[in-house]
Image (cartoon, rainbow over all chains, first blue to last red):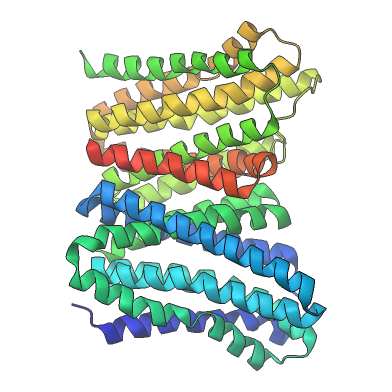
Length: 244
Length: 242
């Protein structure tokens, strides 16, 4: 049986992966939009594959409960988007160019991380192998997020180490949310399919509403489709072996 | 009823359901772009739901075979689209009258429906109830997709009946491949893992390469993501009731 400390370390590792997004700037001055698109496509495939695993686990406990949880996950991401859009408008009216953009990027990425932390936590309520798969998917998804933050900070004179540090900070809600989410589904067993549904709904919706549209904008659609599909299948099969 | 006849019946009903697409097209001669986007979004969600059903039901015993099958399905479609020069083809161009475009559309759609037929056939081999659920999902998805294709053909000057009939006729590969897949897999059950992989890989690839890029452009990411995830949710819910 996993304990809260294990959940915390897994979620901390996914947060640390965000720092890897700063590494390309140690070698090159700019990263091409197509590079970001490919990273998003790979993250999309892994997250969709991981969500399939979550839904399969959730429906074993109850399909209706899983779908209710997924609805809550979708609504959470929608509400987050709305909230951030409103803030963006306010800052656009008040703040100053560069600093505003940096602050906005940090807030967006940090708020993003909440549902990802919940996903890691509830996956541990299912099984350690499921949680490992989800943690890997979220860790890989964090790399382009770190890249996005670094792409804003680096041209403003922040060093590679500073970019990595700020990227990791934006993902710190992950370990902080994972532990309470895990403890909750452990203490209230009937909540597990709702929690799993929440995580799956939030991840699939994030892929559909943000990652894929961005990827299609910046790269050719056949290449994006190829990257998404191959990583999705790889993730699903990987989970099958992990669960044995 | 003999199981093969049941597959033929389910797949034929799914194809015939496409006729319902005549209603929205008749209602508005030129459907707004956002409607086309939502219809494609529903179709994408149902296909992803179908891929999930196959994976959840049949991946367990032989994940490696399924992975190889999926890679083959994905690779085959990528190669065919590339060889035919259709990787970046816009499938929803309204008012385009070039003759080549009409043929390309019908060809792409015939190719698109083939893996859906394979999915129905594999699902029937795994369990008749799963086959019925898969055929129902594909039937609803046919209505959405045929409405989009018929709208495009109608805007090229084809009459309403002709446009819906031509669009519906592209589903014939669904019926043929559903029956063939079922017959072959019933005779050679060892192939189920491989063929399941082909169906899953091809379904997901078609969603990512053909459906989603168009609908994002037509209706915007938020509404498309909502209708697609709603369609997926209904499939997951129906699999629980089953």
